[in-house]
Image (tube, rainbow, N blue to C red):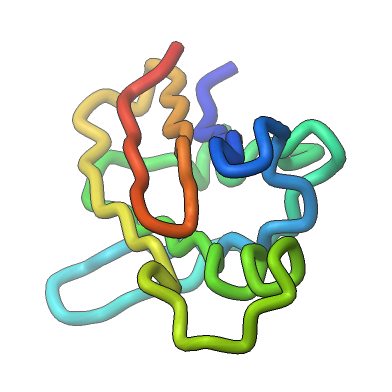
Length: 116
């Protein structure tokens, strides 16, 4: 089954990104079509794929990870965060393959890659 999945690892705490809200959009020119909103589970993963089967089509996608809200809860800081919403835009060229887009994050940095 082809699908799109993600997970978040909190490098600041050394734990999964539990409770992080994520929005997924499909980009069609200047239009953004919201596909899904999820809250990550205790393992920093969504309980189901973000998109799958016939809804998983080639094109440009955008994931928004609301990590500013997450780190405010973790640190208790009310200061304006250095990183707030982490936005990752990526392309799906072959929707017959599964794609995994992990996020490694701290309050000051992030990294991503195409996982398996």
